[in-house]
Length: 260
Image (tube, rainbow, N blue to C red):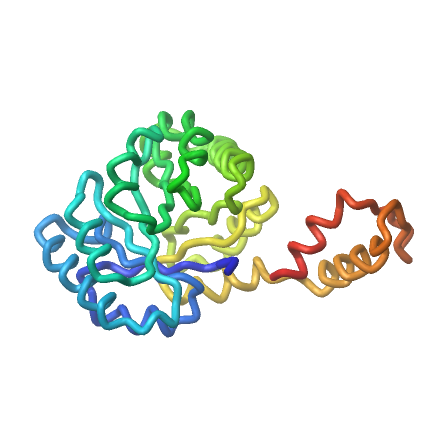
């Protein structure tokens, strides 16, 4: 599966779990961390594990746990549900040692949310339990004290390179917090797509159609990809009807477009 949309749901809102699963999001993220007040975290864990136990597995599910909350990982693992774990504020690969042991094979998404984490992104991506990287853009902005788009672009590219160098998929873009600003969401998602990132997390279902539209291949992209694959069936260098010269180095991008 190559998800392009993921929807966060607060773990203390069990009334929204089934709605999120039916929203069309490729992945549902049940959040035990930032979206839940400290006083509600115990109840949120109970809601999440109860739903996972009863859930029929028709949608990809991840759970974002709290830093140092080993009991949350044990509880999620005990449900037997085939879920992924989102691990916040990872700064070194050593942060994942105990977590990976507790997860017992559940795939980990390491969230890079600080300057130190960004600096160590390649080593974190290389950890054998890590299935994906993700950038926590709000926390990173706070840590850096930066507002310029250039800083965010740098961070996105850095995490992308770390992930791909480790053989991991391109990271998904972080949440766009201005829920009503769909034009802004589209512009920023297109910016991230142009940098090479793949997909985006959302905090409201209304954001999902925009995210899907941005990452769906256009008719021109699909036509180009089909032409490249057809022209390079026998290898070597070929020229498309448009006059563009193509070679096997372009097959990866073409197949990626068709795979969407």
